Image 1: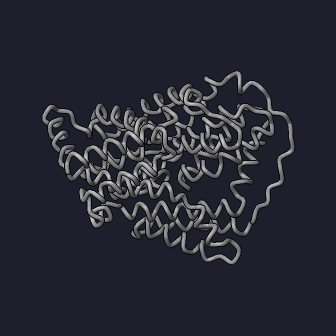
Image 2: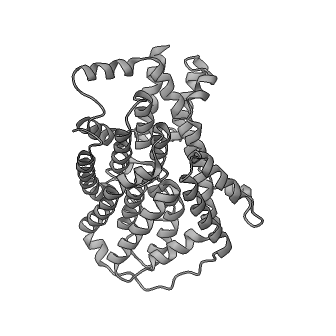
Image 3: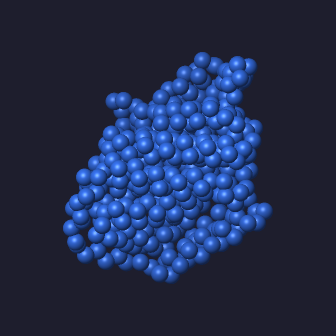
Length: 408
């Protein structure tokens, strides 16, 4: 049975790296689900073991944040912000800066994947209407969403996983993360500006912004919900329960249908996490990974050191993706200290900006943009992603070392 568990594990993570099964219309979630089904059917993993392997607080917190994001989507807030951003100025450089700042801020609060899912088509419509090359702005959108999301423990799925696994303090992490996050947002702007100068030189065609209908009451309700969530994070109440309580209040609405709100949840992403928890649990049961880690430790190669964690997160995030990579690392190294967990959150998130395949956020931007008639290729992303990522990681490594959170 050990050989089957290892085979399924390897094939699933190859599927994560490729993004789909060649020749079949089976994408990442389908790959993970099929892997879990094989493990359950073979008896390598029982249904009870698969259920206990799922980190339900993480799933609950992510679900609740998606409901909070749905509140803003249904109220028209995202549409209004996107219209204001794309018509922010006749100077493309100012437009780029505004897009990065707004996306970074929203991603820190409402999770990067749901922000780019809602924002990308709206941004594309505004850019294409002004005859602008959408590619540099799409790279900036993904880069800023990743960078901004690193600021908090609810900004992206991997940070949610890390925060829940290590019981990290929300506000202490924010203080640790804020300086490298701000630097990273600057690097996103610099990298896109430096690598897309011709595209950013053309001024936009002046067209009036399309009128956007916004429900002010529902938007205000969403803003109050964010304030309530921040206040609850100051209490001893677990984060997932705080978020669920806020989400439950939002669902109690006379105007916004609960069916539409719940329908806005990215169920594919949640199912992907659930399946990956089960697949990594089956692999961990074999003991092979633990033996390999013990062997590396005997050679002085310790994952808790920056010299090891940096290349591991950079390579893993840009092959299997940063969320699957973090699930695997946390499963194999369940007792990482607080400083190392903070470092893992920052490094894995910033590493996701290197290539288009580095994070689910990047892939969402590319796929949603394609549906609107704006293409973003692997090389389009890499030309800006590589310099912004290397600069962000360099600053983060120095910062973590100076704070004494991780040894080199």
